[in-house]
Image 1 (cartoon, helix red, strand yellow):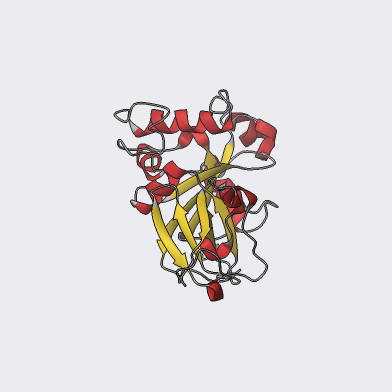
Image 2 (tube, rainbow, N blue to C red; image 1 turned 45 degrees about the horizontal axis):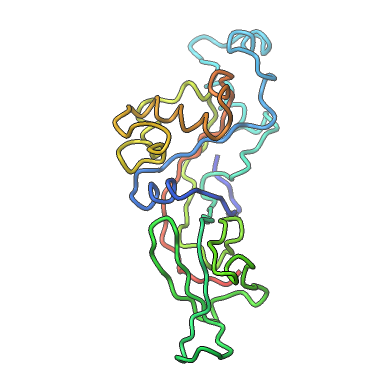
Length: 236
């Protein structure tokens, strides 16, 4: 399903996920579908509810086909193929005194990205006029990702594919594409880096959505994406 009108939305990622994207290890993400299809029924009960399946068709094929044909009145909140996402991450903005004076009316800002400690310089013209320095930054503290404006985002993603499935049906390859493989993986703080991608992803999922969220086996949006180059500092 290709969207004729491209949308752009913000999305929050923690430092582990940001590093995984920067390293090229993360190209997928999963989010629970709300409300859940079939009210949490098992696959067998769901098949009975829809009156059975055509020969040679799986439940996932039927659900994806129905959704892509817009017979299922649920849209992925992150967007459709072709839509774009800009990443919000933990950061630390500060006024950059380009005129070499401690007291001046400079509007230039230096941003430190806390995931990897890199910096980016933004001129006053790059910054939205309505933006004001967050209180946390004024006090010299780190600033949560939710307060990152569009102009300060350094990571831009394009959605390439969207489908639905149940969380327990994730493959080993897809778990790896979630960025949970290796010592710098997004799941490293929850399990040993040597753990295989599937159990590592399960631990990560439960750390986000509760200890019994995996056993509930919810239907999820599977969003595949690629990182795209975009001019940094677009005021918004």
